[in-house]
Length: 248
Image: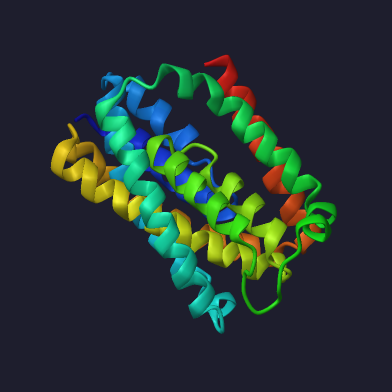
């Protein structure tokens, strides 16, 4: 790996970590970077999933304050996310999934628009301040886990939309739970792809520390934003991700 290649992947990992901590969708930065380096599609996908794991860890560490008092909520939803992520990892490794790939831009766009309408949807579906009571939140997190393990792009937008509809809480606290679920889903992917996927460990070793730093920086940026501004940033980025996926 040449010095320009090294710097290119470091920059992609840093920016991907920041974006994932803010809203999710950092894959749309690091994945094309790996493709541009000449890695095959499946190798780029699984390498990207492994390399971005530290960024999700950095996001959870950065949200420590917002996670206080949410242990039960995060634990119950994490179990559901693990089941969904196992299914999504198996789909990626065992099936071509062309139909699912064609649906991804529409899923991300729908999630972004649903997040924009979050206050109205939350009144429609209901939820509790101290924990989710609707079974629909578990169904949504399960599907989010499948999607996130299969194709990471826009996973944060999808998860934040689901959680925002059912949890009557401050958006920053909800985003902190989203960060935990993203880490859980990513962890399942890392285990599955490390054991059974064609991971390029050299590229992963370059991107991983950069994504960790990016994840820590991203949570600081998100905390500085008012809830309405953060929602607007996530919606705008989500629609941008959907457009980029559609064009690809």
